Structure formats: C-alpha cells, structure tokens
Length: 242
Image 1 (cartoon, helix red, strand yellow):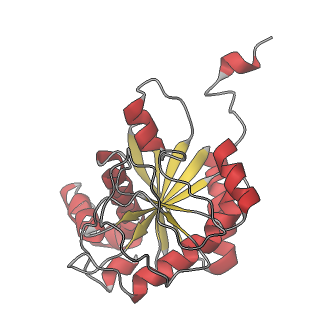
Image 2 (image 1 turned 135 degrees about the horizontal axis):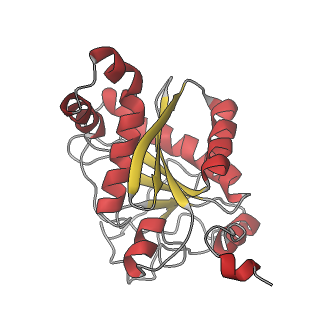
C-alpha cells in the first residue's frame, strides 16, 4: 500500500514547475504558491537547468483537453509504497487497475519501463503524499527521490514522469472496492492498484493541471523529452503510408 497509509495528505495547489532529482531538499524562495498554465515561469532550482514548463511538456490529460482530436500515448499511474507498488493504466478515457509489484530499487524501475513498453504508455503519473494540511513530509521526499531517479531512465526513452497529489486515494480506493462488492481478501491484495487508479482519475479530472514535471538534470535528456518517443503507427498510421 502507498505512502498514504502512514500519512494524511492534503490537496495541493497548481504547481506547473519542474523537479530536479538531484535537489530533492531544495525549496524555491519567493515563489508564488501557484502559477497559471499560461505563465512561462518555472521554479529555478539551479542555473544549469533549462526552464521547461508544462506548456512545453504538457501531460497527456492536458493535451487531450486542449485538443479533443489529439492522438498519443497512454498513461501509467503509480502508487509507490515501501514494499508494494500499485499500477493502473489509462487508455483514452478508460482507466483500470493493472497490477501490484512487490519490487524495490532498480528491479522496480526496470519493471515499470517494461510494463510501459508493453502497454504503450509514454508518461508516468506518480502519486505524491502530503500531510492533511497540504504540506510535504519526509515520505514525500522519499517519493521525490525515487521519482527523480526513475525520471532519468524514462527520459532515455522519451517518456515523461509527473507527480500528482495522492491525498485520500487509499480511502477512495477502499470505498470503490467495497461498492463493487469485492471481498476483504481481494481488497487487501489489490488496494495498491486501485489507489493508483484513483491517482489517475484525479489526474484526468483536473486535466493534468496539478501535476509537477520531474525533470532530469542532463540537458541531452531534457532535449529528448522535448522530442518525445518515436511516433507509433497505431496513433499516426498516415505517417507510415506509402
């Protein structure tokens, strides 16, 4: 089960900025609590990082809101836990729990990449725990640390990693499974995957506007993110004709 089991959490404000994996404890100063998506401002953690905003690398939910005819990859929701990690998948507007992984460290990261490849996902929406008053906690820092390392691996394939406030998703997942009539044993085994599904549902309900882009420090990888993964024939068949 995710970090939210140990913590309460609060819904955060709009944060269209990036996160540097090597500076997990640094906080920006004199920065507004929220910025409109039309703003080109980003939070500057270090002068070696280029300013990349959600305008330049918008999550799929925001792209779909802006352009109903947009075609692109799918989204993988991730509920990180100390021993178990739940996954959920969104294909279009269909969101479903996927699986629960009992892996950590490099093995977990590699398995996430493999599943994303199989499911044709090009972005990861990772739940970020917060306290009941909306503040980040030591558990939030742990999630940021894992997300930062993983973002570098994902960027090598042109895939993006975002953080989404996961406040209350475990409770929401439990309520959903009870309403579905699932047994206690089934709920216990699948709670993490359903929590990841709740993260994705919140992400899409907000059109991706409360996500944070996790940006690798390497400038070449940043450029690769801008380019994105290779075009998929299933999404763009006209580009492969003739």
